[in-house]
Length: 321
Image (cartoon, rainbow, N blue to C red):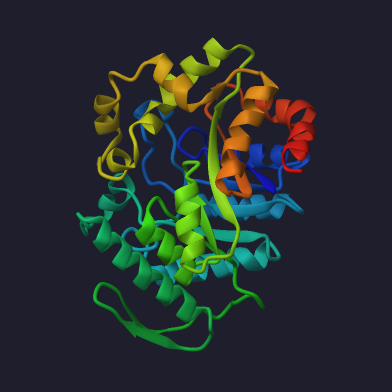
């Protein structure tokens, strides 16, 4: 088991994210994962810096901390050739500490370039499959070309490649993406404790690490924590069919007007009770995940990091036994 810390790029500016990452390393986290967005989910979150610049700065300021995108969509806003180059560079400057997390994306971020966003999940998966084929092709070295149904590559070469390419973790919430993760990925990425998704991944031949985000909200009391999460993170209770489709923060604000504090408490572990956090972690471990990423929606990141270092981390080692 490894434990990661989610850098909420929608909620903090770049300098603050870098600061939190260095604190996460000192607190004993194995890795950090950063969302790769163009927009925040809600306007009052107020941020969305370029994830790759932030990761490069973190790589330069840390020594052992793993780095991951959680997740990048390499199909619309980015061409996969650009992600192949970016990931290879980050793997080099981090000395092998980077994992490329990829997914089929959300309209929220991908529509901004004006090229449209596939209406069907099947179309998005086909796009992602071609993107991963292009990334793998470029990581072989030399000049490469590719002609797919959706994506093309013309006589391109990534000149700076690591000796070993970075692992790719593919986001999945159903059988199609789980098969894709097994076919072209080195690991699985999920946001729910779904044993079925892990089973589908294994039955398709997947044998790599399984990443999952654990939603929590730390504050000195559970009510303060839940209210903070309600204010900035209520979009998380809408479900993937909503999260992947809405185009702008104003749409998420409208779609979440009726979300209540009790809805937040059902999804987020709130407050300071270590046993609650351990139970949340155990739910994901029992489902088959072995890379847990704590996604803190509470109002005090420093408080959460200190709580992790002094109280939670020592107990988590017992849960994994």
